[in-house]
Image 1: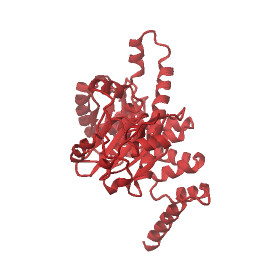
Image 2 (image 1 turned 180 degrees about the vertical axis):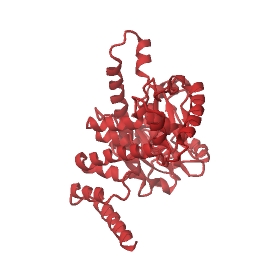
Image 3 (image 1 turned 180 degrees about the horizontal axis):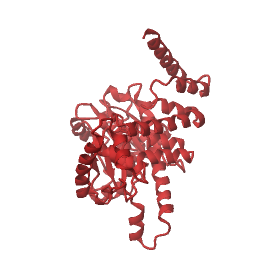
Image 4 (image 1 turned 60 degrees about the horizontal axis):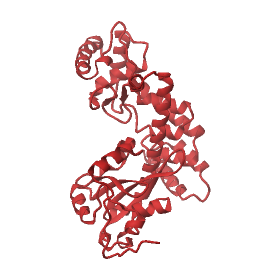
Length: 396
Protein backbone atom coordinates (compact mmCIF):
# COMPACT_ATOMS: atom_id res chain seq x y z
CA UNK A 1 0.00 0.00 0.00
CA UNK A 2 1.37 3.43 -0.93
CA UNK A 3 2.00 6.03 1.71
CA UNK A 4 -0.33 9.04 1.76
CA UNK A 5 1.59 12.31 1.78
CA UNK A 6 0.16 15.67 2.77
CA UNK A 7 2.02 18.58 1.08
CA UNK A 8 1.00 20.94 3.88
CA UNK A 9 2.00 18.68 6.74
CA UNK A 10 5.14 16.86 5.79
CA UNK A 11 8.46 16.50 7.55
CA UNK A 12 11.26 14.03 6.82
CA UNK A 13 12.04 11.47 9.48
CA UNK A 14 15.40 11.22 11.22
CA UNK A 15 16.64 7.80 10.18
CA UNK A 16 19.63 7.63 12.55
CA UNK A 17 20.61 8.69 15.98
CA UNK A 18 24.05 10.29 16.38
CA UNK A 19 25.97 7.03 16.89
CA UNK A 20 24.14 5.22 14.06
CA UNK A 21 24.81 8.11 11.70
CA UNK A 22 28.52 8.07 12.52
CA UNK A 23 28.77 4.31 11.96
CA UNK A 24 26.77 4.43 8.73
CA UNK A 25 28.91 7.23 7.34
CA UNK A 26 32.16 5.46 8.22
CA UNK A 27 31.08 2.35 6.35
CA UNK A 28 29.55 4.06 3.34
CA UNK A 29 31.43 3.81 0.00
CA UNK A 30 31.21 7.58 -0.51
CA UNK A 31 33.09 8.30 2.72
CA UNK A 32 36.45 7.75 1.04
CA UNK A 33 35.73 10.10 -1.87
CA UNK A 34 34.38 13.09 0.06
CA UNK A 35 37.58 15.07 -0.78
CA UNK A 36 36.55 14.95 -4.47
CA UNK A 37 33.11 16.38 -3.67
CA UNK A 38 34.68 18.98 -1.39
CA UNK A 39 37.12 20.09 -4.08
CA UNK A 40 34.52 20.32 -6.83
CA UNK A 41 31.50 21.63 -4.92
CA UNK A 42 31.92 22.42 -1.23
CA UNK A 43 34.93 24.71 -1.56
CA UNK A 44 32.75 27.10 -3.56
CA UNK A 45 29.80 26.80 -1.15
CA UNK A 46 31.19 29.04 1.57
CA UNK A 47 29.32 31.09 4.12
CA UNK A 48 28.25 33.68 1.52
CA UNK A 49 27.48 31.35 -1.36
CA UNK A 50 23.78 30.81 -0.68
CA UNK A 51 24.34 27.13 -1.46
CA UNK A 52 24.23 23.82 0.40
CA UNK A 53 25.88 20.59 -0.72
CA UNK A 54 24.36 17.34 0.54
CA UNK A 55 25.45 13.73 0.07
CA UNK A 56 23.01 10.92 0.72
CA UNK A 57 22.89 7.13 0.55
CA UNK A 58 20.92 5.00 -1.92
CA UNK A 59 17.80 5.27 0.25
CA UNK A 60 17.83 9.06 0.19
CA UNK A 61 19.05 9.50 3.76
CA UNK A 62 21.32 12.55 4.05
CA UNK A 63 24.75 11.63 5.43
CA UNK A 64 26.64 14.90 4.98
CA UNK A 65 25.37 18.47 4.60
CA UNK A 66 27.85 21.32 4.12
CA UNK A 67 28.03 24.82 2.71
CA UNK A 68 26.59 28.22 3.63
CA UNK A 69 26.33 28.28 7.43
CA UNK A 70 23.34 30.65 7.50
CA UNK A 71 21.53 28.56 4.91
CA UNK A 72 22.16 25.41 6.95
CA UNK A 73 20.36 26.98 9.89
CA UNK A 74 17.42 27.88 7.65
CA UNK A 75 17.34 24.38 6.18
CA UNK A 76 16.99 22.91 9.66
CA UNK A 77 13.45 24.31 9.62
CA UNK A 78 12.45 21.74 6.99
CA UNK A 79 14.73 19.07 8.51
CA UNK A 80 17.19 19.14 5.62
CA UNK A 81 19.88 17.86 7.97
CA UNK A 82 22.30 14.98 8.32
CA UNK A 83 20.44 11.79 9.17
CA UNK A 84 17.08 12.83 7.67
CA UNK A 85 15.34 10.81 4.98
CA UNK A 86 14.62 12.65 1.72
CA UNK A 87 13.41 9.82 -0.49
CA UNK A 88 10.30 10.28 -2.64
CA UNK A 89 8.46 7.84 -0.39
CA UNK A 90 9.02 10.14 2.56
CA UNK A 91 8.78 13.67 1.15
CA UNK A 92 7.43 13.36 -2.38
CA UNK A 93 9.13 15.21 -5.23
CA UNK A 94 12.55 16.59 -4.27
CA UNK A 95 15.86 16.53 -6.10
CA UNK A 96 17.66 13.91 -3.92
CA UNK A 97 14.75 11.48 -3.79
CA UNK A 98 13.58 11.97 -7.37
CA UNK A 99 17.11 11.61 -8.79
CA UNK A 100 17.36 8.26 -6.99
CA UNK A 101 13.90 7.21 -8.17
CA UNK A 102 14.56 8.08 -11.83
CA UNK A 103 18.25 7.10 -11.76
CA UNK A 104 19.42 10.27 -13.50
CA UNK A 105 20.19 13.87 -12.69
CA UNK A 106 17.30 16.25 -12.14
CA UNK A 107 16.56 19.87 -11.24
CA UNK A 108 13.59 20.80 -9.08
CA UNK A 109 12.54 24.46 -9.17
CA UNK A 110 10.85 26.02 -6.14
CA UNK A 111 7.12 25.15 -6.36
CA UNK A 112 7.86 21.91 -8.22
CA UNK A 113 8.58 20.39 -4.80
CA UNK A 114 5.69 18.35 -3.43
CA UNK A 115 6.18 19.70 0.08
CA UNK A 116 5.04 23.34 0.24
CA UNK A 117 7.55 23.97 3.01
CA UNK A 118 10.30 23.45 0.42
CA UNK A 119 8.85 25.85 -2.19
CA UNK A 120 11.30 28.67 -1.34
CA UNK A 121 14.17 26.36 -2.32
CA UNK A 122 15.53 24.96 -5.58
CA UNK A 123 17.89 22.05 -6.00
CA UNK A 124 19.84 19.89 -8.44
CA UNK A 125 20.79 16.30 -7.67
CA UNK A 126 22.47 13.35 -9.40
CA UNK A 127 22.73 9.69 -8.41
CA UNK A 128 26.14 8.08 -7.86
CA UNK A 129 26.77 4.54 -9.08
CA UNK A 130 29.18 1.79 -8.19
CA UNK A 131 31.75 2.00 -11.03
CA UNK A 132 31.73 -1.77 -11.54
CA UNK A 133 28.18 -2.99 -10.82
CA UNK A 134 26.49 0.32 -11.83
CA UNK A 135 24.17 -0.04 -8.84
CA UNK A 136 23.13 3.23 -7.18
CA UNK A 137 25.15 3.84 -4.02
CA UNK A 138 24.18 7.41 -3.22
CA UNK A 139 23.16 10.87 -4.33
CA UNK A 140 24.78 14.32 -4.46
CA UNK A 141 22.60 17.42 -4.17
CA UNK A 142 23.01 21.19 -4.23
CA UNK A 143 20.25 23.22 -2.63
CA UNK A 144 19.69 26.98 -2.45
CA UNK A 145 18.05 29.71 -4.47
CA UNK A 146 17.77 30.08 -8.26
CA UNK A 147 21.54 29.57 -8.69
CA UNK A 148 21.09 25.95 -7.58
CA UNK A 149 19.18 25.27 -10.81
CA UNK A 150 21.23 27.46 -13.15
CA UNK A 151 21.94 26.04 -16.59
CA UNK A 152 25.48 25.02 -15.64
CA UNK A 153 24.46 23.31 -12.39
CA UNK A 154 23.34 19.96 -13.80
CA UNK A 155 26.43 19.44 -16.03
CA UNK A 156 28.62 20.35 -13.05
CA UNK A 157 26.84 17.82 -10.84
CA UNK A 158 27.03 15.12 -13.50
CA UNK A 159 30.76 15.76 -13.88
CA UNK A 160 31.16 15.57 -10.10
CA UNK A 161 29.36 12.23 -9.96
CA UNK A 162 31.58 10.90 -12.77
CA UNK A 163 34.69 12.09 -10.91
CA UNK A 164 33.46 10.43 -7.71
CA UNK A 165 32.81 7.13 -9.47
CA UNK A 166 36.23 7.26 -11.12
CA UNK A 167 37.91 7.99 -7.78
CA UNK A 168 36.18 4.97 -6.23
CA UNK A 169 37.62 2.87 -9.06
CA UNK A 170 41.06 4.45 -8.58
CA UNK A 171 41.00 3.54 -4.90
CA UNK A 172 39.99 -0.04 -5.70
CA UNK A 173 42.76 -0.38 -8.27
CA UNK A 174 45.22 1.07 -5.78
CA UNK A 175 44.08 -1.41 -3.13
CA UNK A 176 44.57 -4.30 -5.57
CA UNK A 177 48.04 -3.01 -6.46
CA UNK A 178 48.91 -2.67 -2.77
CA UNK A 179 47.83 -6.24 -2.06
CA UNK A 180 49.92 -7.51 -4.94
CA UNK A 181 52.87 -5.44 -3.78
CA UNK A 182 52.52 -6.71 -0.25
CA UNK A 183 52.28 -10.33 -1.27
CA UNK A 184 50.49 -12.47 1.28
CA UNK A 185 51.07 -11.02 4.73
CA UNK A 186 50.68 -13.54 7.49
CA UNK A 187 48.88 -11.27 9.94
CA UNK A 188 46.51 -8.32 9.89
CA UNK A 189 49.30 -6.24 11.41
CA UNK A 190 51.59 -7.13 8.52
CA UNK A 191 48.89 -6.18 6.04
CA UNK A 192 48.47 -2.77 7.57
CA UNK A 193 52.21 -2.23 7.64
CA UNK A 194 52.77 -3.14 4.01
CA UNK A 195 49.74 -1.59 2.34
CA UNK A 196 49.76 1.85 3.94
CA UNK A 197 52.54 3.69 2.13
CA UNK A 198 53.35 7.37 2.27
CA UNK A 199 52.20 9.46 -0.65
CA UNK A 200 52.80 12.99 -1.87
CA UNK A 201 50.03 14.96 -3.57
CA UNK A 202 51.42 17.57 -5.95
CA UNK A 203 48.92 17.61 -8.81
CA UNK A 204 46.87 20.78 -9.03
CA UNK A 205 48.52 22.13 -5.87
CA UNK A 206 50.94 24.98 -5.24
CA UNK A 207 52.29 23.13 -2.19
CA UNK A 208 52.76 19.45 -1.39
CA UNK A 209 50.50 17.35 0.83
CA UNK A 210 52.14 14.38 2.54
CA UNK A 211 49.71 11.58 3.41
CA UNK A 212 49.89 8.07 4.81
CA UNK A 213 53.15 8.74 6.65
CA UNK A 214 51.97 7.73 10.10
CA UNK A 215 50.99 11.17 11.37
CA UNK A 216 47.46 11.78 12.61
CA UNK A 217 46.77 14.18 9.75
CA UNK A 218 48.29 15.09 6.38
CA UNK A 219 51.36 17.34 6.43
CA UNK A 220 51.49 20.36 4.13
CA UNK A 221 54.92 21.07 2.69
CA UNK A 222 56.23 24.29 1.21
CA UNK A 223 56.61 24.41 -2.55
CA UNK A 224 60.39 24.06 -2.34
CA UNK A 225 60.21 21.06 -0.02
CA UNK A 226 57.56 19.50 -2.23
CA UNK A 227 59.83 20.03 -5.24
CA UNK A 228 62.72 18.26 -3.52
CA UNK A 229 60.64 15.27 -2.45
CA UNK A 230 58.98 15.06 -5.87
CA UNK A 231 62.34 14.90 -7.63
CA UNK A 232 63.73 12.34 -5.19
CA UNK A 233 60.59 10.20 -5.47
CA UNK A 234 60.83 10.32 -9.26
CA UNK A 235 64.56 9.62 -9.36
CA UNK A 236 64.37 6.80 -6.83
CA UNK A 237 67.92 5.67 -7.61
CA UNK A 238 69.19 8.92 -6.10
CA UNK A 239 70.74 12.17 -7.29
CA UNK A 240 74.10 13.77 -6.65
CA UNK A 241 74.15 17.19 -5.00
CA UNK A 242 74.99 18.86 -8.32
CA UNK A 243 72.29 16.95 -10.19
CA UNK A 244 69.59 17.74 -7.64
CA UNK A 245 70.66 21.38 -7.46
CA UNK A 246 70.52 21.62 -11.25
CA UNK A 247 66.95 20.31 -11.23
CA UNK A 248 65.93 22.88 -8.62
CA UNK A 249 67.85 26.07 -9.37
CA UNK A 250 69.45 28.06 -12.14
CA UNK A 251 71.74 30.17 -9.96
CA UNK A 252 75.49 29.61 -9.49
CA UNK A 253 75.10 29.27 -5.72
CA UNK A 254 72.64 26.38 -6.21
CA UNK A 255 74.67 23.82 -4.22
CA UNK A 256 74.92 26.07 -1.15
CA UNK A 257 71.22 26.94 -1.35
CA UNK A 258 70.32 23.25 -1.68
CA UNK A 259 72.25 22.28 1.45
CA UNK A 260 70.48 24.94 3.47
CA UNK A 261 67.08 23.87 2.14
CA UNK A 262 67.76 20.21 2.90
CA UNK A 263 68.59 21.12 6.50
CA UNK A 264 65.18 22.77 6.79
CA UNK A 265 63.43 19.84 5.08
CA UNK A 266 65.07 17.30 7.38
CA UNK A 267 63.92 19.33 10.38
CA UNK A 268 60.32 19.34 9.09
CA UNK A 269 60.29 15.64 8.25
CA UNK A 270 62.12 14.64 11.42
CA UNK A 271 59.09 15.62 13.48
CA UNK A 272 56.35 14.25 11.20
CA UNK A 273 57.75 11.63 8.81
CA UNK A 274 61.24 10.55 9.93
CA UNK A 275 61.33 7.61 7.50
CA UNK A 276 61.21 10.09 4.61
CA UNK A 277 64.22 12.14 5.71
CA UNK A 278 66.49 12.07 2.62
CA UNK A 279 69.76 10.18 2.84
CA UNK A 280 72.85 11.67 1.21
CA UNK A 281 75.68 10.69 -1.17
CA UNK A 282 73.63 10.43 -3.30
CA UNK A 283 70.52 12.23 -2.07
CA UNK A 284 67.77 9.63 -2.05
CA UNK A 285 64.69 8.38 -0.24
CA UNK A 286 65.13 5.12 1.64
CA UNK A 287 61.35 4.68 1.97
CA UNK A 288 59.29 4.55 -1.26
CA UNK A 289 57.14 7.65 -1.71
CA UNK A 290 54.14 7.38 -4.02
CA UNK A 291 53.45 10.49 -6.07
CA UNK A 292 49.89 11.13 -7.24
CA UNK A 293 51.53 11.77 -10.63
CA UNK A 294 52.82 8.18 -10.57
CA UNK A 295 49.25 7.00 -10.00
CA UNK A 296 47.96 8.87 -13.06
CA UNK A 297 50.66 7.39 -15.29
CA UNK A 298 50.04 3.92 -13.88
CA UNK A 299 46.33 4.16 -14.67
CA UNK A 300 47.09 5.34 -18.20
CA UNK A 301 49.44 2.41 -18.69
CA UNK A 302 46.63 0.05 -17.69
CA UNK A 303 44.14 1.70 -20.04
CA UNK A 304 42.05 3.15 -17.19
CA UNK A 305 41.74 6.52 -18.91
CA UNK A 306 38.62 7.76 -17.11
CA UNK A 307 40.11 6.89 -13.75
CA UNK A 308 43.36 8.60 -14.74
CA UNK A 309 41.51 11.78 -15.70
CA UNK A 310 39.64 11.75 -12.40
CA UNK A 311 42.95 11.34 -10.57
CA UNK A 312 44.42 14.39 -12.36
CA UNK A 313 43.13 17.54 -10.62
CA UNK A 314 45.62 19.76 -12.42
CA UNK A 315 49.27 20.30 -13.40
CA UNK A 316 52.08 19.18 -11.14
CA UNK A 317 53.04 22.08 -8.79
CA UNK A 318 51.76 24.55 -11.41
CA UNK A 319 53.60 27.60 -10.07
CA UNK A 320 56.97 25.89 -9.74
CA UNK A 321 59.76 27.10 -12.01
CA UNK A 322 62.30 24.46 -10.94
CA UNK A 323 63.66 23.01 -14.20
CA UNK A 324 63.25 19.40 -13.11
CA UNK A 325 59.69 19.97 -11.90
CA UNK A 326 58.74 21.81 -15.09
CA UNK A 327 59.99 18.79 -17.05
CA UNK A 328 57.95 16.35 -14.94
CA UNK A 329 54.87 18.58 -15.18
CA UNK A 330 55.10 18.57 -18.97
CA UNK A 331 55.72 14.82 -19.10
CA UNK A 332 52.60 13.98 -17.11
CA UNK A 333 50.40 16.52 -18.92
CA UNK A 334 51.66 15.36 -22.32
CA UNK A 335 51.12 11.69 -21.48
CA UNK A 336 47.54 12.39 -20.40
CA UNK A 337 46.84 14.50 -23.48
CA UNK A 338 48.20 11.85 -25.83
CA UNK A 339 46.08 9.18 -24.16
CA UNK A 340 42.98 11.33 -24.48
CA UNK A 341 43.63 12.05 -28.15
CA UNK A 342 44.38 8.47 -29.15
CA UNK A 343 42.15 6.31 -26.95
CA UNK A 344 39.40 8.35 -25.30
CA UNK A 345 35.72 8.15 -26.16
CA UNK A 346 33.82 11.28 -27.17
CA UNK A 347 32.34 11.68 -23.70
CA UNK A 348 35.67 11.23 -21.97
CA UNK A 349 37.41 13.61 -24.35
CA UNK A 350 34.68 16.15 -23.66
CA UNK A 351 35.24 15.71 -19.91
CA UNK A 352 38.96 16.29 -20.49
CA UNK A 353 38.21 19.52 -22.34
CA UNK A 354 36.23 20.77 -19.35
CA UNK A 355 39.23 20.43 -17.05
CA UNK A 356 42.06 22.91 -16.59
CA UNK A 357 44.31 20.55 -18.56
CA UNK A 358 43.03 21.58 -22.00
CA UNK A 359 41.11 24.87 -21.88
CA UNK A 360 42.26 26.22 -25.25
CA UNK A 361 43.70 23.18 -26.99
CA UNK A 362 42.31 23.52 -30.51
CA UNK A 363 43.55 20.09 -31.60
CA UNK A 364 41.68 18.44 -28.73
CA UNK A 365 38.56 20.49 -29.46
CA UNK A 366 38.59 19.40 -33.11
CA UNK A 367 39.21 15.77 -32.10
CA UNK A 368 36.17 15.87 -29.83
CA UNK A 369 34.04 17.37 -32.59
CA UNK A 370 35.02 14.50 -34.90
CA UNK A 371 33.97 11.92 -32.29
CA UNK A 372 30.68 13.49 -31.21
CA UNK A 373 27.49 12.43 -33.01
CA UNK A 374 26.23 15.01 -35.56
CA UNK A 375 23.20 15.91 -33.42
CA UNK A 376 25.03 16.09 -30.10
CA UNK A 377 24.12 19.27 -28.16
CA UNK A 378 27.74 19.47 -27.03
CA UNK A 379 28.93 20.40 -30.51
CA UNK A 380 27.68 24.00 -30.37
CA UNK A 381 29.76 24.82 -27.31
CA UNK A 382 32.90 23.33 -28.87
CA UNK A 383 32.41 25.26 -32.10
CA UNK A 384 31.93 28.48 -30.15
CA UNK A 385 35.16 27.90 -28.23
CA UNK A 386 37.12 27.18 -31.40
CA UNK A 387 35.78 30.33 -33.03
CA UNK A 388 36.64 32.40 -29.96
CA UNK A 389 40.21 31.06 -29.92
CA UNK A 390 40.60 31.74 -33.65
CA UNK A 391 39.32 35.28 -33.15
CA UNK A 392 41.83 35.91 -30.34
CA UNK A 393 44.68 34.59 -32.47
CA UNK A 394 43.63 36.79 -35.40
CA UNK A 395 43.49 39.86 -33.17
CA UNK A 396 46.92 39.29 -31.64
